[in-house]
Amino acid sequence: MAARVNSPRARYREQTRSEIKEAAVRQLATGGIEGVALLRIAKEIGMSGPALYRYFASRDDLLAELVLDAYQGAAEAVRAVDTEEGGRVALHALTSAYRAWAVAQPHLYLLIQGTPVAGFTAPAETVAKARSVLGPFLAVYTRGRPLVSVDPLLAQMRGWLDAQPEVAGWVEEWTGVPAAEPAAAVALTGAVMTWPQMHGAVSLEITGQFTGMGHDPATLLDVQTSLLADTFQLP
Figure 1: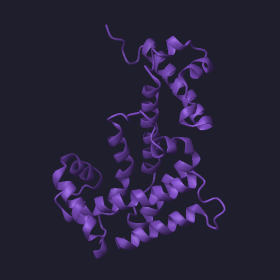
Figure 2: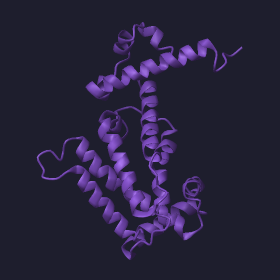
Figure 3: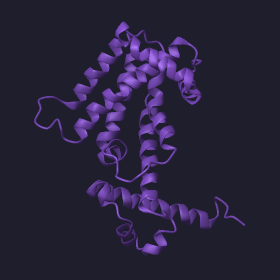
Figure 4: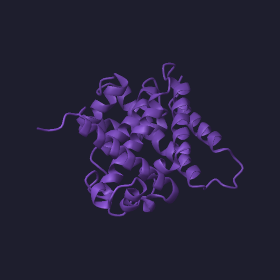
């Protein structure tokens, strides 16, 4: 008979997996992805190497879980934002919350947004996890009125919605707007434009590329967010 989820054996297994992941995150923080080593983790938590492999079949298996956990943490950070007021106020709050999460734990940010690990294939669930981070941004743009300069991308996003039912479902889930409505394409366009703007600023800050420059990275992101809000004429 399979162990029940709440059985002592199942609880012990989950606790041990959590300890392994916590040790891996510590290694990630001090040595980057290359510093994550299963045998060192086993030694740190007082477990034999073969025993650890009963919980994670390989280093890539462990990294896959860390990737999903990192996306989950980022999603929780943006979902904690009060977006009831909507519009540009909510957009600023969301980009600020995402930056705060990344700056607080740059090792996790770089795990999901840094240089891809050679030979590592992210789990299939990664797309859904990434969309859960971007989801709250969709609702912010539903009342947007994008400038004419956005039209080429807006048309492509309209085509994406029409061609991909799962994308249409994702947008409708977060906005409450049927995918066929013009506001759905506007929301998707706004979120897609926010993604590179936000990550460009955050990535450069996290990797130290702004060192010696005469600006506060938070101010730069705030200005970029205002430009996006202006482009979509958000209230």
